[in-house]
Image (cartoon, rainbow, N blue to C red; front, side):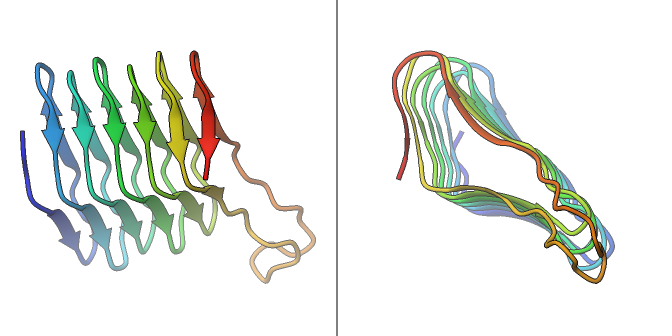
Length: 165
């Protein structure tokens, strides 16, 4: 499957984006689900072969969606991945491949909660820039006298090296 950029945009809510090729490869441009004041949708890309995408973003004025990119039999290569929620909770980000994983910067950041980030490879190497969860600042107006709480950012590989550039 080959696509150009795909955008789902709405004022009160944005829809989900799903690209599936269980027996083949997927190549896409940028994938964006964006809502000005409401919740952004989930983004799922799953293939049996290689997955190549541009940037992937779920951007919500409220909550942002989960982002999942998987290949059960090949490699995954993406641009930057972001799940960002202005006033709500950010979604989880999962990138998994049988082979190598190559990503740009991965960010999950929400005003009331950050999502988990998981990047895994069964047999290959995980290469990426930065992984970022951004907990709320200590003593901020919306969280006075509270310690910041963030979810872990992890990279996992059953074989090979993990490289954060």
